[in-house]
Each structure stands twice: as C-alpha cells, then as structure tokens.
Image 1 (cartoon, rainbow, N blue to C red):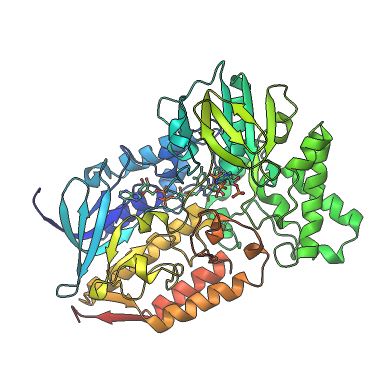
Image 2: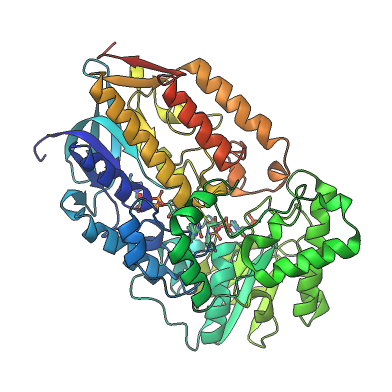
Length: 537
Ligand code: FAD
Ligand code: N01
C-alpha cells in the first residue's frame, strides 16, 4: 500500500464540477486532489464520444462563467458544441488554471469513511492508496454510470457491442455493417442519423418513443457572437435568473389554455423554427397542466407525421404515453427524417419485446434481427449511480446505501444528515439536470467553497445537515414536483429506468433562482439547517 496522504479536500471526478472545485479550493489556499477514473479530464465529454454527441444548450451558455478572461478567449465554432470541442475546452481549462498537478487519472475511488474522532474522511482508491481529508467532495456526475445491458444472452453476441456512454476514443467504423441500436433517448437520437449515414443497415429497437425537436445546428451566427461579446456579463446574469438557467429560452407569459388554437399553433411553430428547448417555454402552463401540455405534445406529433413518410412508422415514433418535457426533451439533427432512409428500420418493442441477444443479433418475440454490431443507447443509473458505487460510511458507520435505501435524501442536494463534511456537486434534491448544468455546477461549487472558507475562518471542524432540515427539504422537493407533469413520465429523473431502483423524483423543479436564493439565505443565516462544530463531536 502506498503512503497515506493528508489533504484539506479530496475531490472525486474531473468533469465540469471537479475542475472548478479544485480551482476554487486552491484559490483559497487549500490542499486538494482530484481522483478520476478516466485517463483524462472531461467527465461526460470524456466518456460520451458516440457519433453526433453534442450539447443541447447553446455553446455560449453551456460553459464556465467564473472567469471573464476564459470566456473572452474561448471561441465556440458551432451553435451546439460537439463532444470533441467540449473536451478540448475542458482540457484548455485544466491547462489554463494549472490544474493538472493535482489531478490523478486512472484512479477510481472505492470507499470513503468518516472518522468521528478526527472529523476527517479516509478515502481509498483502486490503486490501494489511502488519503485523509477534512472534506470529501463528490463531483462524480449525475449521468456517469452507464447502465449495463441486462438482456439474456448479451455475452453470447459474436460481434462488437458499444455503449454510448463508454464510447472508444478511436471511434467506431460501421461501414458495411448491420447495426442494431437499442434505445431511443437523447444519445440514440443524436447518434442514429450519423450511424445510418455510414452503416449498411440500422435497426432501431424502441421501447418508448421520445419527443425530439430540431437543433438547427450550424456555425455560430456572427450576430449572436458579437451580441454576446458585447453583453456577456449581463447575459450570464440573465441566464441565472431564468428557471432553467438558459437565457436563450425565453419564457412565454400566457397560459396555453387561454390562447386560441391558432395562437397556440403560431407560437409553437415560431418556437419550432428557433429550435432546441424554445418550444417548452411557449406557455406558462405546459409543465403544470396536462391538457395544456397535450397541445404542445400534439404539435410535435403532427411534425413527426409530417416528416416521416411511412404513416405506420410515424405513428410508432409519435410519443403518446407521457407529457412532453416530463422526460428530457431530445434535440436532434435529422432524427425523424432518418426513418425515411431505405437502410433504416424501426422495431417497436411494445409489439415485440426483446427476448434475448443471440450470437448473431437481437431476438424479439416476433423474429430474429441479424446484426454485426450492437449499440446500447440504454442510458445511465442517474443521479445516485456513481455515489452508490462508492462504499461511503458516515457517522456511526452508517452507509449511504442504507441511508438512501428508499431513495436519495439530502439537504439542498448538497449534504446528507449523518455524513458530515461530505459535499455533493449537483446532488439529488438540487436543480441539477433540470437546469443548464454549467450554471448549476458553478453555483454549487461556489456555495461549497464559500462554506469551507467560512468554516476555516472560524476554526470549525465539521458541518452536517440536520435530520430535521433534510426531512423538510425532501418534503419540499416532492411537494413541488407533484405540482408538475414531471412525475408522470417513466424517466431516469425518477429512477424508473433502472429495475428495482426506488421511484423518487430526484431533481428539484422549483427553478434555479428560487433554489439559489434559498442556498444563499441558508448561508447568510449562519448555515441554517446545518450543525456546525468546532471539532469532533
Ligand atoms: P461528469 O461530467 O459526469 O464527471 C464526473 C466524473 O467523475 C466522471 O469523469 C467519472 O469518471 C468520475 N467518477 C465518478 N465516480 C468516480 C469514482 N468513484 N472515482 C473516480 N472518478 C469517478 N447537461 C447540460 O446542462 N446540457 C447538455 O447539453 C448536456 N448534454 C449531455 C450530454 C450527454 C451525452 C450526457 C451524458 C450528459 C449531458 N449533460 C448535459 C449533463 C452533463 O453530465 C453535465 O452537463 C456535466 O458535464 C456534468 O459535469 P460533472 O463534472 O458534474 O459530472
Ligand atoms: O439515456 P435515456 P440517454 N430495453 O435514459 C431505452 C443526457 N444527454 O443516454 O424510455 C429496451 O434517456 C430507454 O427506453 P425507455 C440527457 O439528459 C443529453 O439517451 O426507458 N430499451 C430509452 O429509450 C439525457 O436525458 C444529450 O422505455 C431500453 C433509452 O434506452 C440523458 O443524458 C445527449 C432498455 C435510454 O434513454 C440520458 O440520455 C445524450 C431495455 N432494457 C444524453 N433500457 C444531449 O442531447 C433502456 N432502454 C445534450
């Protein structure tokens, strides 16, 4: 076993969250080290290298705002940055802020145990190293644990298989191949048009059709670039005042049910032409009223029927089982039009379920589909998956797995009662995935580093969420979710995509500004809802 290191903070994960966390703590003069399982920085943008992978929030908004110099010097080339460009950006950030000397790659954190005698964490990794730290900060990602394909016979398939969330660095050449793609979430919807352009044939296995809207991606509009350059600080501030942390999605002010059908159609059409998430902002009641919501859903279904030439295929692709927006809206380039290609076919798993993966392809209850390669676009064990893979033990040896057995419980998505000095960046119970995550991450990292500074200045050794504050916050998160259409989709927001996972709506849907103000008020009131102690209690 290597020697034991002692630090102020251990940070787990080197994506958007971990990199900025390290930078902030170092600015405060603290010693910190980042442990990352991958061979480089990037997190999501390191692992998800599938063809077509790109952001679904416009590039100038999905980036750090903490450094005006960084913001000014970095020039995005497309309206929606590609995965390679985002990876380049995060590598640039690592170099520009001299982060690499405290980044350790190819190192998976396996356990973290709180020592009540010292109020410190002992963190162990898969290299056998042990490090102790006052603070342990989980920047482990909401969508960083790829779901394993649990199909009977999966191991018998003779060809290569790929998961979109663990795509190989060298890329995959599908030329001349028959490819089976399982899943129709955002990853599938981005990759299918590109795979279809290369492969001999693509068969798509769809369990639930998804709503998707056009991205209209392309080179950045010079007028937008110039406007942002001139008004950057103001626009960044405006983004932070919107519910989803996205300035470009202007929120309409009228309820859909008070508009005439013609007015609704005109507004949906105007927003469809803008592309991206603009559609969901059309009216005030789309996420709270299912009747209102269905007017938007029907608009998109009509679009699908208009694009897809074969009416039977169009009907299979038209989502009808959940409100639009209750599962993350997909943003695509030519997804529906891809079904007009001769080399693409759709298998509706509601008619014929997958029975097994065989040596030569996919077997459904109706027939065998031959494939040379399989792409699993089956998503992630979201929000809690990465934390669940680490043996985390808090006060009294209580494990996080036990504490969260009925679903995740946190105070503000930042801390957990019984787990002092353990912070989560964009944890369950915070806006996280229902927000522009660049905005959500910066707010969390800044709140955590301010908190650590506060403790240091007062020689406090520990901070811990109280059980009462946590109970109250969990109740509030659920209460707000229940006023919306969100719990009506069988989504990963609810854990519904992982068999056996407790069904709890995990992100906070109260809106980014409301949440941020709450976090700020908690801090201003001497960390209300937290117990602070000078040392071990
Ligand atoms: P991640 O980027 O997930 O990084 C976490 C890192 O922690 C990973 O590198 C992982 O290897 C590491 N890690 C986890 N556990 C351990 C461990 N035990 N030991 C060591 N290392 C560990 N969000 C948006 O707002 N807009 C978008 O358009 C958008 N697009 C997305 C597209 C895809 C394909 C995916 C999967 C997600 C997307 N997201 C998007 C969400 C995205 O995850 C966040 O925007 C953001 O990148 C998260 O950064 P992070 O640093 O918090 O987590
Ligand atoms: O994963 P998903 P994803 N048999 O869970 C299907 C972000 N992201 O990787 O809907 C058959 O959305 C599953 O079917 P169903 C974004 O936040 C953003 O695509 O559960 N099918 C579904 O169709 C996104 O939401 C971008 O019935 C099975 C699909 O697999 C999140 O990451 C791009 C199955 C999984 O869809 C996750 O997206 C990519 C089974 N056993 C990702 N198991 C952008 O555009 C699962 N499925 C920025």
